[in-house]
Image (cartoon, rainbow, N blue to C red; front, top):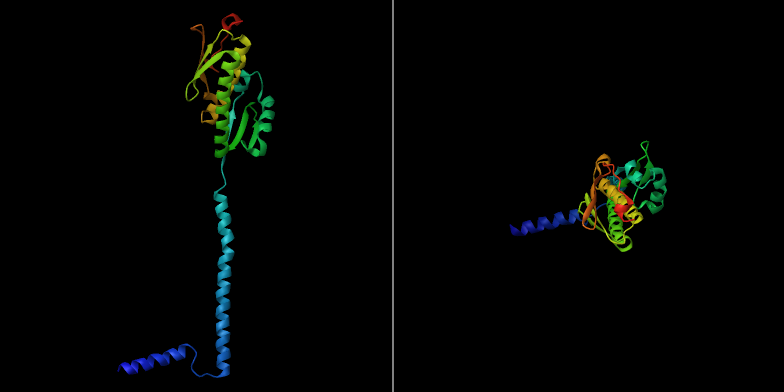
Length: 226
């Protein structure tokens, strides 16, 4: 019985492998069928490959970063005695290859509008923090003014020294407050809600306690130190 099964298996193997005797015409037919099957398989692979670029292009679209507008209101520039129109050129000059902004423009309310991606926003926010810190160091070194500031930039204290002048106070105040306003808005504060509580001290006496930009205030040159 086992011998019969082995013989049957060998015969089937010969037929499948094409080792059985066949006529030349049948061989040509078989070659044509095989050729058609191979061509069909190749075409199928090409169709799959042609679909790949479409998948890649759809992926590229999802990677596109969205932008957001950040409005720096006119009252920030009023502190420096300038307009947004006067500020816009310096913003464009520092924005080499759109590093910080996609667009910078002045709107109908004379506010500066910065259009940024999330990545650009974080880059510019870091830059503004650096400028604030540089201003603090410069104030102490050049103007004899020591500045203490809260972590989220909503409270500041300016301690005037013996060599502090009224001009030095004015320059330090403008630099510090304008950059703080910019930082707060980029960090998420609404344009109309930015502000800082500022105290100014001289010889251990408070000579100024205001909320900028809300409070109107004046201080004499004598109080500031001449």
